[in-house]
Length: 248
Image (cartoon, rainbow, N blue to C red; front, side, top):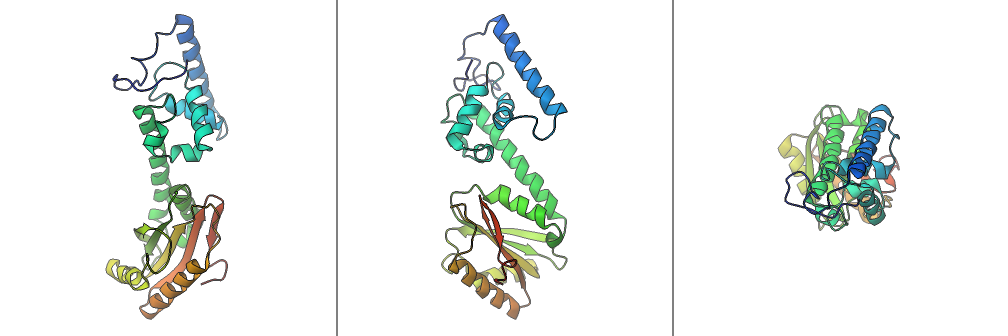
């Protein structure tokens, strides 16, 4: 039985709106949820299909009934599991069967994923935890629909001391000022930094402006003893390191 929206029963989105299921319907629903739970707990990473992962997450907001229609509708609307989990809660609630409680449950998973990824890089030298850093940046930025600029400031041991959100918009001197980037490095006691931004188009290949602004910041940093380790561009299709491409 598809979910139909929110109710005012705290913790159950559809209890007040959905008709009371028959005993056989209740048993079927309980059995399906139990089977999903068993596969989740006993299986590996691929134990559940993407729509089944969403089904299980929706159990938190929909205590009874079939969550499969809402799960499949979410995937159809947003395209991928990642896109669903990173979607705006209001956008999630525009999908039939998804109410405020379900949207909050899905949002909490995305927040947990970001915090787990960040914890992998926060206490370790960034350059020796490069894959963890890329995972963190990809989880946090690959889904964005606007271009976002960040600067990761590092201490003398290349540990992250400040993840600074510079702003949103194209990366050029109108949005990111080389002197301001280096000044903040001095203010927070950073000896090195990594520039990061995303390409909403999905293609992470650097533009001419990306390369030019990177070189200007690197030159400004060199004068004041601040090293620009890299400029990483994140996209849905992957990532690009300007250092690896020999552009710094």
